[in-house]
Image 1 (cartoon, one colour):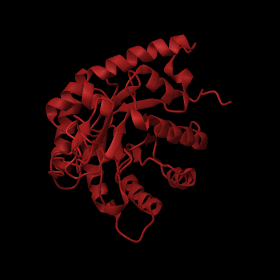
Image 2 (tube, one colour):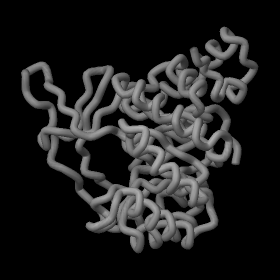
Image 3 (cartoon, rainbow, N blue to C red):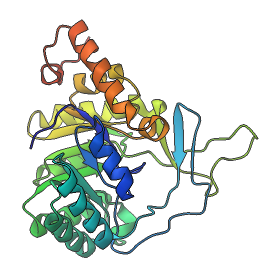
Image 4 (cartoon, rainbow, N blue to C red):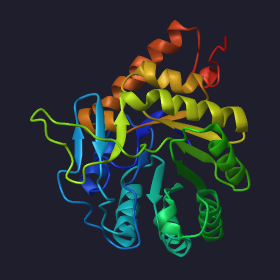
Amino acid sequence: MHFNGIAFNASGPRDTEPEELKALADSRACAITTKTATIKPRKGNPKPRYYDDGDNSVNSMGLPNPGYEEMARRIKALKHYSDKPVFASFSGSPREAAAITSAFDEAGADVLELNLSCPNLGKGKTEAESWLEGLGAVEEATKKSLAAKLPCFLNACEQELFCGVLEQSRVKYLVAVNSPGGGLMLNQKNEIALKPLHGGYGGKGIKALALGNVFRYHEYFGNKKKIIGVGGVFSGRDAFEHLLVGASLVEIGTAYQIHGTGIFTRVENELKTELEKHGFKSAGEAIGKAIQL
């Protein structure tokens, strides 16, 4: 699988409708991630459910999506239109995940991206146990490459526990990080910006947390897994920093929602300048080269 660049979209913004997917295919994005699909269609949470101030965002979308069967049809059409790698994102119980995986595999998705949360997998299990069960179900349903969209860890011990789970799996791509929850922002009218009040926090403010998570994964796995850095990428410098701490690709969420597909051209062009400035001939040369004092 070939990536013509390092930057593409994170699952969530502008990646559901056929015209949105076509716009990504026509853009400088090196791959395409689809909206997280569930077994049944979802309308999502009441609006307003997204807000940004140009730098940071909160969202409580509630996973609005057309359901996995319709998304599989859209993925199939997308693969006929474009030869870019497609990361098909989905969420559900182990049984649901297996069914969705099979459908996305048949539709031609290149990578199956598992986006699971503990409440979807039943009570009485630790989050790590739930992930292990979910990954097992997916692995039985496909031979395609797998990606895991991972939570934002604030505790190194908890992250290491997840590393143990991932080490037992054949997940190839670690997508780090998902939006940390509990965010709240006010608009210019002094109103809480979201109808559901709290939401996932994204944008420039989470870059330091994302870099910390990426760095720990790279320390643990080295070159055994490919890390996709997600969080705070608005510029080529931001992407360069993700490379330095161990990412080989980056996904862009909030900045893509704000600036549209032009963000991928901007990041790739600025990254080229950063690499030349610091003496790297390619993005690959910069991976994991952060200097430790």
